[in-house]
Length: 212
Length: 275
Image 1 (cartoon, each protein chain N blue to C red):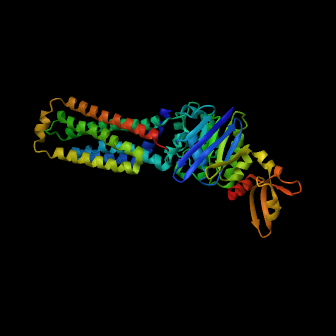
Image 2 (cartoon, rainbow over the protein chains, first blue to last red):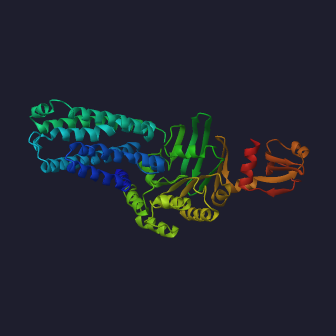
Image 3 (cartoon, chains in turn orange, cyan):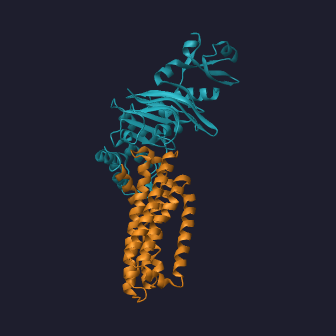
């Protein structure tokens, strides 16, 4: 049953990610101490990646083969992975939002007030949902070692994009043009959710056809 | 009713074919699937579990395999695949949310009986302990059919014997059946009612164990005398400078021969070598 799969996913996540959770805390503290939002923007990159490593744990332990012994179909196995990543992405978004609010209060910036954190939050949503969505079908098709390459490519692309936006000469004027912050977050969430759902459907098809 | 029915199971791999296998396991019985490494035992079991695509027809407890049906089946594979960091308590938490008929007390009873620590990580378990945990899981949801793929492989004789006792206990209920594969034939000989012999992807025979032990016997003779026998009588032979030892069908040889009983292991080795 799905509840059993989710229980397993969360237990494995919590037991295999203790060190990484500590590293994420360090990123938050560093971001606030260094007064640099980019440290915090690593959270939505790292947390879903940690959730995704459950697939590698399954391969190493041969849980992927062993799961054929249990009363769960392939669709539920894939869904449990996506649901874990979805919940972790939501957690990453909330942690990122709280950290940015703390940072903005810690370091008030008249040119970039707290009302203008929407682009960062939109980026956080997009990072945490789209990056795993791009690599998960590869993980299910070819295994996690090849899927990891795809994740790195997607992450490098996202990091480059993020860096490019911070280097824009008229960054402030672009930010000032964003009149409706909730619209940009909603838009980012909708696009990310659409990519996530398409990825989910593709991975399900792949895994249902696969011999394990 | 048959607990398991396999008809014309065929699976092609590059360099290996599981070739048109058919056999059935009557309810309340234990069937041992014997074969050398690579004979097709695991392919057969993975086909039964729906892990592979295949040609043919497989019915488990009278139905095609489905996720829901697995609530009534206990499976132990040659490697019990729990993630390293999990402990017995975690496995219990997962399984009680996995199986609709999970029996918490039965599981904890098996854990106690097997002497497994409940707070030690799975990675710190020995191979025997891992296998016992897999068996405890397979036995703790009121399964009617156990499917075991090489459960005694790599274990010491003491643990193997313990596992065989547990499986014998399981079949005290007339509705309980077991399909067990192994290349350790002596284990299956102690346990099984039926023997299916797979060799290079082909099913060489599938019969009641006692009937096999009754039907086939050893004779010691010469090559010349062996050549005089009905060619269907000889299932396998081994020649040395002291003579020829052969396994033959008791019904097809003259009464004048001195015969000795065979074991399933003898039969397996001689038939495999003859092929």
